[in-house]
Amino acid sequence: MTSKFAIVTGASSGIGLELARLAAADGYELLLAADTPFDDETPSGAETIEVDLSTIEGVDALMERAGGRQIDLLCANAGHGLGHAFLDQKVSKWRHVIDTNITGTIYLLQRVIPDMVARNDGKVLVTGSVAGYIPGSFQAVYNGTKAFVDSFTEALRNELKDADGVTLSTLMPGPVDTEFFARGEMLDTSVGTDPNKSDPADVAKVGWDAVMRGKASVFAGWKTKVQGVLANVTPASVLAEQHRHMAEPGSADR
Image 1 (cartoon, rainbow, N blue to C red):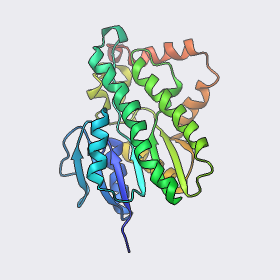
Image 2: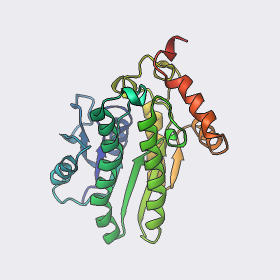
Image 3: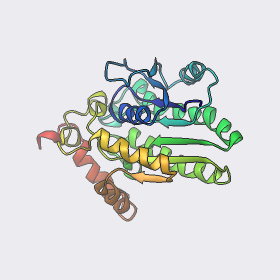
């Protein structure tokens, strides 16, 4: 019997690593990708590749490593955040966020999903965010990219509705206790220092259950779900001001 094969991106830590562990426990052969080194926490037997998924060339390198194997599951989880005021951000940094979260993600989907459609079988999980529902003062580019991802996956899901056997799920967490805030230079913010952030293992399990059941989209945790629902009825200016209190540099000390 041929083993199931899965690709998980952003898998060296956080939600991606936890998704990889769940896939390994379910018997998947794994190809894990990240732009940071893997360590001994990586599931035993997993194949890894350190690659920049913000570039077309990086995604192509990942697909080349897959070697034409049938991809039964794709967890497109790679993403980057970036704090501070937009006018203070370097072009190279905000562009890297956009290229990772948007360009690399949708190019990877375009490389993987057609074969799934052709054989009427395959599962895809994309990590979006409740941040996509909120104008993100002092995280404006990141939240904007997640708004794109949340919207794009909803639209693509509709395009795929006649593709029997192919499912696309969107995981939408809130703040998660990962390296995200350190890498995004947000350790001096209220949200970055909040001790009540979600456990990445819990968030990954929510996403895993959703993709295994073919659910369309899922918020990770009831608090996040409430936040998402309220965002739909709260004026954008109010949401932006609320986000400012969480993400403005120095807000951790207020």
